[in-house]
Length: 435
Image (cartoon, rainbow, N blue to C red; front, side):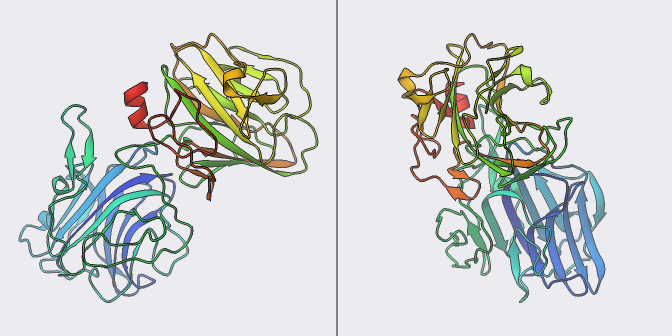
């Protein structure tokens, strides 16, 4: 059964600037036998090493760059096939990849290292300290003994034309096959194939609500500001900006209708001593460059408002800072934006002391000809680093779960504070229904 197998997984990647392992079977180095499926900076690669040499190597010429949604990858192997190109088939989002950057196929009846007695790992290189997968995985299948196609695991939705998962595919897993749904937050490695081929979780992997059928907004690691020094983590829900940089960061989704809500927890390190050291938070016109701050709808930590073409107000003592959780509510049906802090809402006079119903909009007459996306900015200082942990509904600030798990009116998302009535998490199901 080392000759015939299939691997299928849905992946939301956080970046494409270094190699990331998806599936690995073998020892700790290339001196003996190993088989690996990994994402590289140039494409999806399936490769077998043996004795320090590359036995076979398949590399797509399609670069996986999108960090806003899920990719579906399928690798089907059957080395018994007489035609070399049929021995390894690679699919991305339902389409077999026939235009390849590298196409060195295994010899007929070649024995891969998958299904060997060597360790099998998902999301990291066995024994290595690099090539960790950064992002989210969903519906990971391994089939022992059959070469399946992508259509066995996914299908095209008739109305939208979107490739979507088959939640219960009609496949035979074989003796060593497994199906990881990640449905049990206390035991993410549980096998749902019926084989009890469970995996052991290592590291800080978390169960999130971001899935191929309902994708949530994240920070956009591909959007490049003129200032450098940004580091993304936790599936692009956390962004840190280094000392001396004034980097804007925007989200992956833009909206021009509907009512939307998200939360941000701010962490500041260093010796910031004056106001305005923490930056700005709000929304930004997604069509404009991130480092054009007046094209946004943001509140500064010194209580000034920046957006709609100008900066207004007078700098005062910091109204939010390290450890605070800000709540952002954007009403594009009526052209208003509201901001809260730690469960209370702003009165537009420097105080967070109102219920949402009694709060005052910090911006009005917002244009609906633009598409608005979440944004944050760290102000330039020489002595501090800012971290913005966004909760777009996945239920975490960084790696810390929210304590209250409040849903929006559609039942989506897990938030720290009550979502105002009629406002929704920025996820694809809500955008389809309310955007």
